[in-house]
Length: 485
Ligand code: NAP
Ligand code: MG
Image (cartoon, rainbow, N blue to C red; front, top):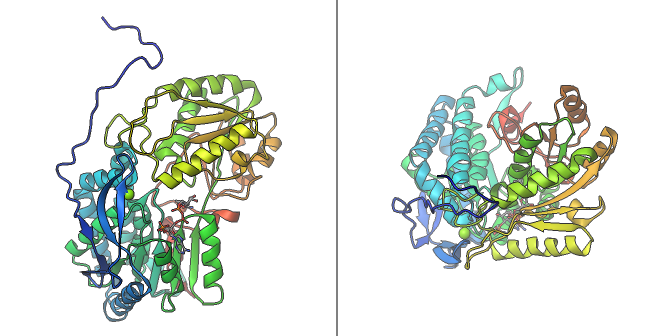
């Protein structure tokens, strides 16, 4: 007979994904001109598994001389092969990358979860399939660019330098590489220091796809490697995804150089719940919006605005749902919240959790067990938060939700727009008219209605204000890699 289950007095049987099919080398060099090349300085960095704190591999640290070699390889490939190749042929290579990625999806998913800490359910069901979808989507555009921009002349930019963060390592690489190649550019990509492995596996896959040497180059390293790429004189375009602070530095460096620039930066998304919303569905959306990927999401719904009359119900249901979230081994298929990406990031999140309490807000955290080793954070929410509080205004980039109430539509629009960011927003209501009203007034690049954190290669993504400028995805994403006249 089934026993009546009280809150959280049950345990799921562990269901770990196998690592047997995965090969991680002890050491990775730089992928330049189609070959694996040792860094000129001889320096390497460790990449660790944030759930065990164990080293996974040593990864080359590229300096300015290595970046120069990569840019030269990309330039040569651009001049001699890629810009001359008929567009349908270019498309075939990109399709090949997409198909190989699908074939190796399990391996990529496991490595992504080991290197970055995200739950296997997400890397398996979201990161890797959506990355493959981006290659498929942009492969289809390669020979149709003229149709995307009728009555205009289209031509590639040349060599693109691309710098990505650690929260969606392979997916960000796909967002950057796929449109660049489809438009006829060659690429030098720098992954984040803590999550280089799936970009290196992608380099192996690109070799297997027999892309001409130098069309894609992957240079691993830290911030200085990224800066060397930004400052290289023979780069035509910089595409950066990361923090607003580094984005501003990059903007200053490229000013006056003629390099094209797109910036995808931070966010502090409002998620707005009206009393007429389907509350249970909204609660799931809130949970997905902020606790998905440990809150390491630029467009996370980190500010919740609840219409006053349903505040108590929403908070009660949220707390109840939080109790059942499983925090732990990223490779376990039951895990909802994996490891925080690094010790530094955990320190930042904990600093904000303390700050929220000092600012006078009321904190609630679930009481789930946490593993001994590794970097972990319980799902956290704050109520009684002020609009001016730092936990309302600043990006935390962790599983921390700040909740406020509102009474009128005008009030919530004003509050929602009142941060330096403008990347995304969510609206939950039964009324289509309210959705249309808010989507025209919220200053955000993406607005989800009665859902959250949904992505599709055909849909443009990007921010307002300090969330950056330029769009990735969809036809807009092509424009960022073309000269249009
Ligand atoms: P970050 O510190 O800005 O790093 C992003 C990338 O830039 C990393 O590869 C980093 O290398 C590199 N970098 C660091 N300093 C640099 C410099 N001076 N010049 C050139 N490159 C440099 O950001 P993060 O902490 O890794 O990522 C989290 C941030 O990214 C959050 O603010 C989040 O909102 C934002 N993000 C935005 C989007 C979007 O689409 N809008 C998507 C995802 C993330 P190292 O890893 O070696 O430091
Ligand atoms: Mg790592």
